[in-house]
Amino acid sequence: MNRETWLSWPSREALSRADLTPARRNLARSIRAVVFGALLWSTFAGRTGAGGWTVAAGVAVVVGCALLARTFFRFTYAHRLWPSLLSLLLVMGAAAGAKATGWGVLALILWCGCAVTALERLPLAAAVPCTVAALGAYALVNNDNWLTTVVTTAGLGLAGYVLRLDAEARGTALRLLAQERAARAAEAQSAALGERARIAREIHDVLAHSLSAQLVHLEAARLLIEREPAGEFRDRILERVVAARGMARDGLAETRQALSALRGEMTPVEDFLHTLVEGPGGGSGAACATRVQVEGERRALPAEASQTVRRVAQEALTNVRKHAPGATVAVRLEYLPHEVALEVRDSGGRGSAEELAVSGSGYGLMGMRERAELLGGTLEAGPDEEGFVVRLRVPA
View 1 (spheres, rainbow, N blue to C red):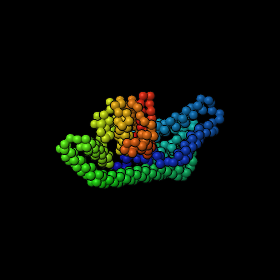
View 2 (cartoon, rainbow, N blue to C red):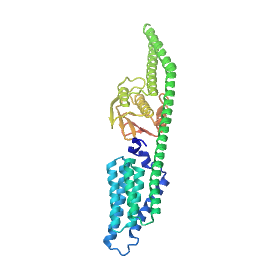
View 3 (cartoon, rainbow, N blue to C red):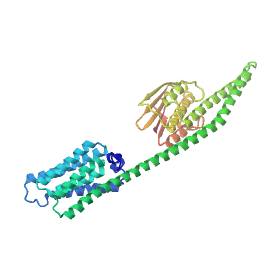
View 4 (tube, rainbow, N blue to C red):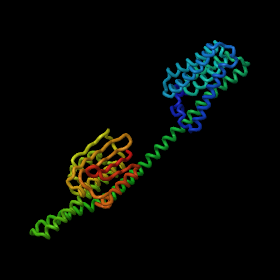
């Protein structure tokens, strides 16, 4: 064995028992309870005539050793050598004290346990001396013949080393499983990003170019119409062209936002809300909104949750502009521990929920609610004391 083998700890995966199923974990607890009961029984076996203080001392030794064993397991899991050795040596010292006071069976059990667990959980450079000391003490005080003692001692040493090898194999399997899961998750994420990039390219090549061309033609049409003599027909045509240009400009802006979302390059939600309420009143803007309030610790949101918050805010403010022009609007975004909440509240009159669900661009309250439910969230919308309120909560 090389130097690293002697000085290295068993991995935390090997020491944690994280791979145990609930049934096996309950079985392990039951076994520990049985062992603890056996230690107590061995303390009293053959000592029916002992005084009360002697029995109490034996029980105290068993309970103290159980607590020290628990401490030893925790320190070895944390790879802290000296506290681990101190806990183990205290148990071995308690075994020597138990033997000196006449608790021979208890002492033998404690020495055997120390020998096996030292080989299983400590670096070999520290485990081998502890195991030799524990098994040496066991061999010296064991009353069986020398052949039985040698076989038992060798068997205990071999059992400890086999348990160590088994734990290392289990830990290696757990690490490989975790690496495989991480690789699969990375592969799936890479595939998703590749597909999003492909969709973004298609949208950019088709929709964005088309809207840009429409803007150019509509702007040219506006300039040509403005050169014509003023008149009712000319003004009506100019109004339609200007409105169509505004819609195309807003559609191009939304397309760019969708492309940014697909590429994972979205601006923070709070910045988007400020831009939305401060923008012009055309398209999805909402000049009537007066303030945006952000609460909680700000953090980056998943793309789906971020896009949902943006779309719901956009649709809610569009409905305010259409159905309650001039109303005062309060937008509140709150970052909660495991979700994000959005509230859009206005002070003006509204139509019914059914009317809003089918109005506007076809998205409406029904579309907002469906978008939230797809992410496991909720959306509530309806009349409030003064006006209308939309509340959204989605996991994030």
